[in-house]
Amino acid sequence: MRSVARSERNIAHRLIEEFMLSANECVAQYLEARVPSLYRVHEKPDAKRVYEFEVTAATWGYSLGVGSLPIRRVQLKGDRRASQGSGAGRARSRFRRK
Image 1 (cartoon, rainbow, N blue to C red):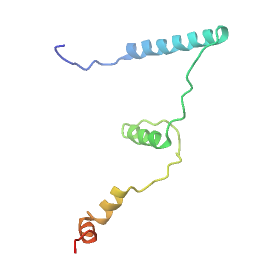
Image 2: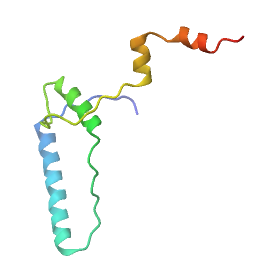
Image 3: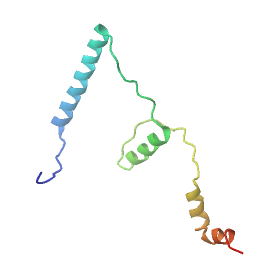
Image 4: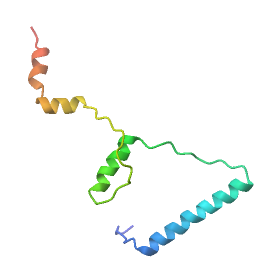
């Protein structure tokens, strides 16, 4: 390999991708009607990850259109420490040798 270059995705790339997806769906429907087949059912995505993606996409003006998501904020120990200070002084005083 000599180099890496970013290629531009244009309408032709998107059109080909849509045709590929459509072909896959047609083959799946054909097989399902005629041949016993195995297929994968994807689990629902983690709500927190969907929310994080939604926030990221919103910075570029995009949205999944999912509305409000059932996210419960959980404060982690590191976040609590950061809001209360480093905590180093408390740790030293707790473990001081006598």
